[in-house]
Length: 218
Image (cartoon, rainbow, N blue to C red):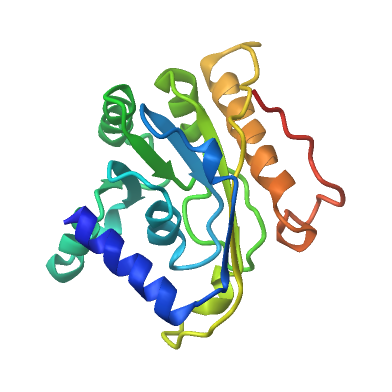
């Protein structure tokens, strides 16, 4: 099912956004073995687009649990290798499943902001991504996406042919342990978001950021 839905997504991109999707850094995504991909979320099409561009069929997605409540929508998410996570909570089942996927050599794509940004600015991450990065034992690849918020505007269904950019960064060098597990998780989450911020145009960074953040890379 994922092979089919990924093909549909790539076909739609070629038809609806011909020559408008600009991809950089895809060579930073491992061609085999586990990897945790962490992205910002500005548009509805971010998850399927980001995953469909990767030349692998074992990409899995962490998605909000609300998306699995209705049967007519649930099968699409399941077909995209998505699994639910309860936002705003320490969803241990989702965390364990993610770690199992990473240790089995798969790619998992997560969005630590928790939901799509209403103004396309980068928002604070949830500490769970730091936990996954700390315990996953796999490369952590930052992914910066912009322009997708113009393809389908929030609350709208009409599609616009706007330029879209997807940039896959080099693996993030995680901060060393300095204190409690909670502190470490938050520090790692912040470092990952800094790496994403450094790849975004200035107007997509947080309001407080006036200059590019340094990007620690391995």
